Image (tube, rainbow, N blue to C red; front, side, top):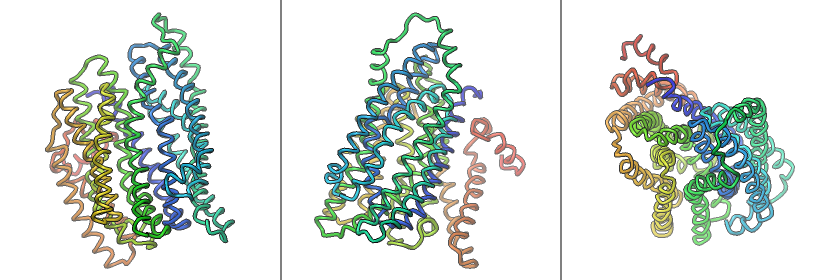
Length: 541
């Protein structure tokens, strides 16, 4: 496959690496943040963030994907006027909806706090509200660049956004808690300070994208002026295309996001019914959202990025009815995805407690956190596949299918969670189990539909079986090395770092020895030529 044909994989990897680094930064700043505001404060922060994320999703979350998909389809046919009209129309729509949702969240924060059964989230929600408007503008700019097959502006803006977020969140949380150390709502002030970082990070990310856009604007205008096509879309046509593309994504992603809101509410009802203290209720929610979900979401970032990158590529191929090339793209993307997801799952499972102690210290119930991670680490594979398969279906114009599957999964998720909590009293583990099942159901339904729509059959042995076997071998080596090193050097952090370094080497060597990838596949991967040279030097291929 040529470099041109596999560009989407490289671009997806660029965005994926940036997303993983961003989430890693997000994970790192959560360490001092958790130690400053505690699990109780993190529970307040997480509850507020679930509602903010839902509002953001309803207003602008789907815009980057919709714009990238529509821009890519027009760019492939050299319809530069229509491409630019899509961008301008999307900016008007997104800014308007973003401003409206910003006002709704800010002035309705008290109402949302009562509905959520967390009165303490009112202040954080008011601080988060302006971020919705900022993100609505940023989303359109990211979609424009993604539609033109470059993920670099999005990647850099994500990194900048997260770096500013980290610094401001920790600093503001510390200063506000210090200022209000005599208040009974001290953890609420800490959570509010941490949300300020989200706003400031978004502002700096937007400023960078505006700068890049202004640099490229003359080129965009020049291409528009050279376009002599007569079939120019008016505002109404462009708006209709955007809404028809965005609405199914909004509804589908709302189903994903609303599970977090539902989980928070059901957990609140459960805690109130069985007289769990408010402090413990928020503390356990903080463990679930601020530790378990945070850690499992880091490797899923790659799947999210590949899903984003593959949509405009598949859209262009689908417009040309190039089904065979679509199948190749899907095969390579899923294989690349699973090569990351399986070792991440096993690594989080075998080093659950050491990783949590290293990152968050010994505060709170560490054993509960570790057991939740061991139980739910398989969510990495499930969410990686469900996210990727959603992107595939959206790329081949099956926009309504992910919506249907998400709501089927919710219909299973809600009663399952209720039974686990109210009948079997599984506590935090009930949240973890239902979270995994939610993604698993979507995986199964999506792959049935992809197979049916494209007459597609995923290669199994080298995509799933070999990476799983290699990951299990890696897991055994990892826990052995950690145990030996920790016995000699009683440092948990050093033992984890050494064990993870060994894990990378063992997994990489095992994958190559099992011939999971051939030379062509390696060359298609980012830095594949370098990996191939090293593999041949050590006679691994």
